[in-house]
Image 1 (cartoon, rainbow, N blue to C red):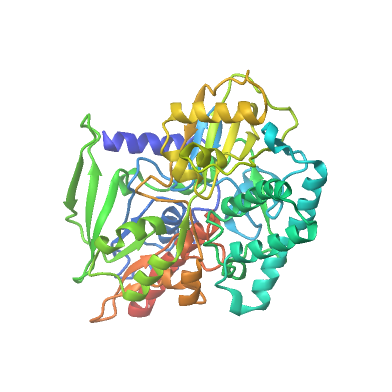
Image 2: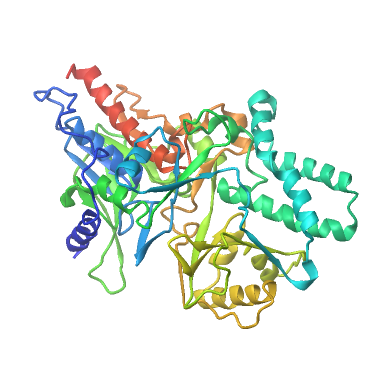
Amino acid sequence: MRFFLQLITVINLLTIADEGFLTGPEVFNDLNENCSLLNVSIAIIGAGFSGLSAFNHLSSIGLHNVQIFEASNRVGGRVYPLEFGIFLQQGAEFINGEDNAIYKAARRLGLITGEVDDSALISEDAQFVSSPNCQISQDKLNKFAEFSSFLELKYAEMAMDNREIWSKTVAQVFDRDYEEFLRKMNASKEDRLQYDSLAKIYRGYYEGEWSAPIDKLALHNYVKWKDGSKSFPFSSFTLNSRGYAPILAELVENVPVNKLNLNSRVVQIDYRGNHVRLKLRKTNLLDDQNLMEEEWLSTHFDFVIITVPIGHLKQFSSTMFLPQLPKNKLKIIEAIGFGSMEKVFLVYDKPFWPENMTSLIALNCNYEEEEEGRIRDSLHTLQPHPWAKNRILVLWLSGNGPRLVNALTDSMLSDLITKHLREVLQDKNIRPPVKIIRTKWLNDQNFLGSYTYITPQSSLISDDPFSILAEPIYSKKDQKLKLLFAGEGTHSQIFQTTIGAFESGQREAERIKEYLIGINKC
């Protein structure tokens, strides 16, 4: 049954694949075909973009004795295009920058539809709505927009110019500037409540864009993050209704089914001996209750490439490795940030929103302490789905939103979002959504969040915390390469992206190649 499900997963993806270069041509074989080490055994943990990239690059340089172990029942990791007439991009949705293989593949496949300014807080066609007790004048909206328009550019330049402030958070500098803005506006108590509602939206922008709480997001991130663009602000590229699906299909098309082990979570990695042993927790799909079974693999590996998300390492690294990881790596795993940004797709029979609306921004001037008030406070940004504008609203959750909303059943969320929309739109006739589609990344043990970011604590530990996460592990006795680390959280420049994940997989495959050349002159 497991083999059959794996085969179906791969076949479904291949139906939308196109001939391309992401998998790497065989003629690019850098190792001598007579090299005695070409049959080294390699395990890749994770079948996301980094794991698939590593597999394809290893194959392209002549290393084929490779197995992928994926904890879930699908490939792609945080790239999750779910077919629903169109593809709903549950995870990654945009492409960052042009100077990378992912953008070039998307352009070749005809997927690119446009470009968006990453620093644009709110589009011109956004509709601001609020309850009757929170009506904000256009004049106030304009004044806040003027105040906030260039703040991100200002903070990026501040970080570039002054290393001493790298460990300060965006919240610290924003709160200072915001108080100065209120002083200049000579804001009354009522004015402040209204401006505070706009400030919450601005904070939400940061928390969504960076997948990080604004009070934990270090200015250091501006110094490290680069997508190849010549200047800030950076741009992202939007994709057509197929989204990432054809790119993922191209990455998986050359992975044989017998080398892809789905529903196989690696729970322990023993690298004490000459080879590396793996303990798997497998989901028994033949059992109605999907019982878990654990076993040590009889196969031992020369190298293991670990591509699991930093959120998973934060939770399980203390029990996952035998012996424990080096102290400097454990320290940075604990200190680095792994935030959460989630999307909820609300499917309706017919729209109740204007045809030309790009965003629905719900303002709230109340500061309610009860749980429902806090949840409703996070339901501030909704957008019509670009390829189903008359059927689907996308609710963007950031900050504490994912934690609060994930605790609700679909029925509870449907009731609450309907109550919220009826109030802010002042329309009691709004119907509940007919369906809710979501992926709870924060709750999923394989992820426990969305993307990596630099916190003040990790900034104080290292100028480049990502390089510590990427450091391979060698045996102490003979300095034999054993464990390698890939994933977006190990890329020093374009972390948080599919590009960073893809390039890190290639990087670690190259590391194995160079190691083999060094010890055997292959």
